[in-house]
Image (cartoon, rainbow, N blue to C red; front, side, top):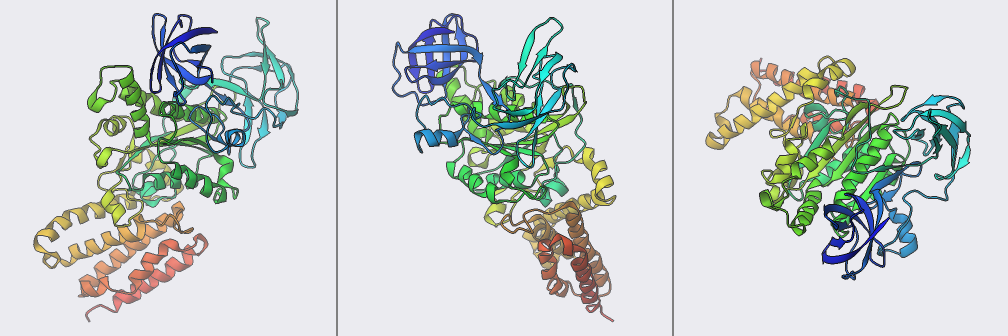
Length: 586
């Protein structure tokens, strides 16, 4: 432990001298109230410290004490269902102690030291173990079995291991290395947030993350272990899309990071998630969710830490062999915190004032995603999927954060304010968005959903692109100048947009759509297209085709309950056929 003295204060930046023995990224306690900070720059015996709490009241000469260890998170039973701030302080516990306002210097363990967990040992005394090996488990929730693992870097023989009820600090066993060094085992381990947890190898992503959002699953899928960004202007629905992904994705666990956004958005999460039934498990969604809240009214410096805290927790659960989604809202606010600290450090600014290392920091976050073979002798695999919202000023994605993110991620879901104002949700622009995983995932969809899936998906995209071309002609010469086939294409494109791509997040049947139902909806729309083409060839009037009552039934088909799809869709197809045949000119 080393102690220095403050010589300068600039907002969340504190400079202290007499810190020669301290190291970069050490955690420090600042001032009389022991505010939490982290060393981000060293010059001789001077340390530049970003303080994760309000610095009002600090003065020159106040003590700065280094803990001589990096900023770390506590990993163990008790994480799930909890809500933390950016440096993993439990907000509910803080509210119980200090009321609705967070007091300075409050130091509360991230994981409760009083709660006892039923540990069941699966390894035996005398077993040779290495880092990542599972020695037992705790049933943390009805959904997640929390595996207790040997910490990375530890290996040897198990000298003792006992099942029973323990707190996270109690010793459950002991490992003796070949050199005779004894390492105690507890239910909890610590890990530095800025260091990625180790794995054996990173594997190519071949399995899609099913989201239940039709435009994503069908046109722009993301792989388990993939990376995606959701850029869009204010009010275009970034947060709602992320909420939908957190609610319905087929991952084992969700780590939701509210980084610099408004507090009412996190309030919506806290109100909704406990009441939502997970379609996979039938249990509350909070039983597979960890929330990290560092909203816009909380200290700016802690935004950077919140991103790393979230991804480290995700890696820990990944090492158990689980699939985890990290949803960050938004990385723009995190980048703004970087810019503020960089400015106070008087570093040379880059584009729009952001630091020159913005891209490398973003890459460091997204590169921790992936599907990996975990350390440990059982060869299990796990994945971390990283999805970040980007909030470009005025919706201009040519700004630095958007461009740096697009160079890194493989999926781009571009939100469009025009679609949002037209009440089209999700407001993902199908002409601007892309997924670089689409070809890699084609085999999975063909094998597990339908051999026709990829062809049908391409056909939908072709129809939407053709509509865009025809719209230009319509603007010049009017719709009456188009051929019957082209007018039919416009009608089918409208059906694709309104009856398939558009979803209602507040309708229980429409908020989530299973893959087979998505396939049935596509086939229904294309069935109408093919039968309408036959009717046109037999002299039917395009205006009469467009105004058929069955069109309304096609539009309502997406809210059909899953168990009724086969029967209802067959009935709609029969009505389509009979209605169009009635328009034939004999």
